[in-house]
Amino acid sequence: MRLLTSPLRRMLSGLLNCCEREGGRPSKCCSLNPHHLLPRQNFSAKPTAAELVRYWHGVFEANRIPEAQESSEYIISYVLGAKTIHSLSASSLSNPLTSEQQQQVQWLSMKRLQRMPVQYVLGEWDFRELTLKMRPPVFIPRPETEDLVSLVLQKSQRSGSPAVNAGHRCPTAIPHPVILEIGCGSGAIALSLLNKLPQSRVIAVDKEEAAVNLTCENAQRLQLQDRIRILHYDACSGSWEQLLPWGPVDTIVSNPPYVFHEDMAHLAEEILSYEDLDALDGGNDGMRVIKKILALAPFILKDLGVFLEVDPRHPEMVENWLQSHPELSLSISATHKDFCGKPRFLHIQKHKAGDSSNKKDFACPSVHLP
Amino acid sequence: MNASSLFHSTINTLAWRPWLWRQQKFLSPQLAIPLFPVAGKKNSCDLLALNETDLEEQFVRGDGPGGQATNKTSNCVVLKHIPSGIVVKCHQTRSVELNRQRAREILQQKVDLFYKGENSDIFKEKRTAEKKKQEKKRRAKENLEKKMHIKEMQESDSK
Image 1: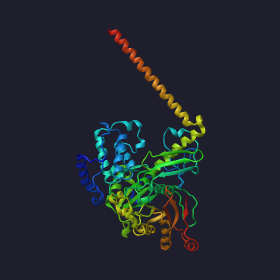
Image 2: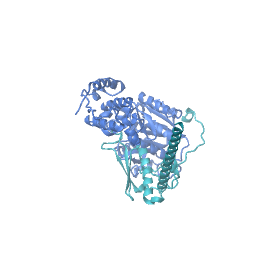
Image 3: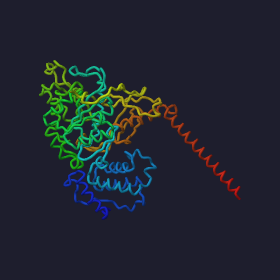
Image 4: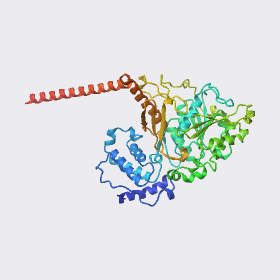
């Protein structure tokens, strides 16, 4: 049975107004179809967390909201002050919620019914050890990107190991690494690196002011603002003068927009309606921003190299592109897979001087680690 | 002018050094960095090391291209220890990386218990904790009985 009671209908129309203010593109996300809610006769006067999770799971499912169970669990945990339902004790789950808590659950769940991503609904999300504020339309960090940080940490901390390939340098551990992040979004990568590398400094840039502001806010919340400089800068603008005074940097890291333009239309409604599409769309071959970053590298980069997250089709495409741009003197020194086994991360470094002659004899070496 | 001078930096004598948890070195499958140990009393336990090659990891992520093209919040990690067949599931946190670390910690405890039985530090800790709990209960019961006795005495005095 599906009901929409009139007080809820009033709340829904209030939410539609709110949706426009908070982000989201009303023509896509705020459909005129009423949301299907379930009758609450089965509730006790004060429902428990477990009962509410079941109820809202049912509502989300009835309204074809993806990840109905997870959405319900995250919202109710959040209202109870926990990160996940699994970190709550059995007794917390069977305690009744106050009416304020119930109202908060309702308010947040109505947003999820608008297909707002859970991370925006809660206004926060975790990335590795950090909890970051999230706000539309700034790009929500993906879990794969946590491994990109691991990769940069590993390479930044390695000391004196032999070069994997003859043509690439493996420098000793750098005491005070300076890292440039292009497209910092919410600050996830930059702040994770700062957190794990206490001696490091980060220059984070983004072409969107909303991202610059959010990174700034997150840096301050985590007390990392002293070691980061955040610039409102468009890496595709072609003018690098603004960046040059900050260089040279030890490494460049980026999760640049890499979705192929033709794939954009197939993305979930959550993404299309709420996230900054410029943070996703990499142009026809998904490499528009990747190419700009690699073209910038020789001007500003020292030895550690460039770390990129990419589409699984990109490793070969990037390799070919670098070969056709020998003036950059860059090549892929390693390709790493994400936790789903897809090639996802590239480590690109400068050739050693005098290696260009070898390029004729073999394809640019790429170490594919398992 | 370079980055160092633009930053107001102070010299910090604390050099980073890798943390190794005695014999236990966790290696994530693709990236060979030691995972950081969790602080707390478990550090004093002497547990069997887990070899990454004995582990099989799966992620409950659902279908989809992954990466930027997907925004899924389910990040449950399923970790299997192939020699013993023990499987643990972890979705305690909202971070995949932390769930992976936590899954390895839990698995290590279970594997240790599996192979060592009563000799496992985990078993011994549990037993000590259980004893303490029972002792606490016994004392609380005693105190309650004492209080009730005193109350009875006072009531009979006032009559």
